[in-house]
Length: 209
Ligand code: SF4
Image (cartoon, rainbow, N blue to C red):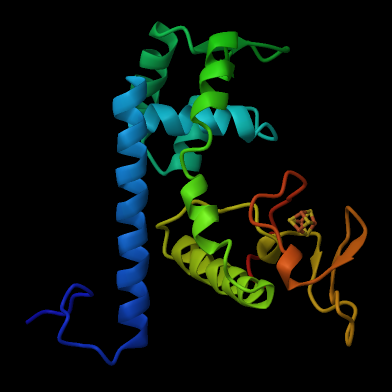
């Protein structure tokens, strides 16, 4: 039988069991967002776009940026945005001197809807709330390593994580409870304060920790 993480006969591979767990979590998230979609009359992609436009304000959103962020084609993103426009939730606007670039903005109704639907993935945060703080920090570091690997394989768009940030100085303060340093915010911090979606992030030219 060809290798598959879905083959339950291999109970010895830790990597496979973690992969199965992650796959089940992704299934749970899909179910949650479909439930929201049924209630709101929007598609899962539209809910995700409203959430991104509302909360990730550090990017000037265009169709191309949204396509990168969501690992979708510009044509798919454009269709979903057109539908959101028709519902009065998103507006396309040109601004500044470069009149060729079209930016995406939420309308008042779009902001209201985004606030209402923005908690669709909170169930994930609730699921780890009971873990001891130390375990959470280890989990966070492992998660970032997994994300980095997926990014390296071209399966995930780069996230605004400390470990790939130009300003990250890992272990700059050795033997300290807060060993890392951020060169732009100028603070020392520990593993549990590592960020995965930092508004001050700047990509390192060579990615890696
Ligand atoms: S700017 Fe943000 S992502 Fe970069 S090192 Fe500082 S805290 Fe981390």
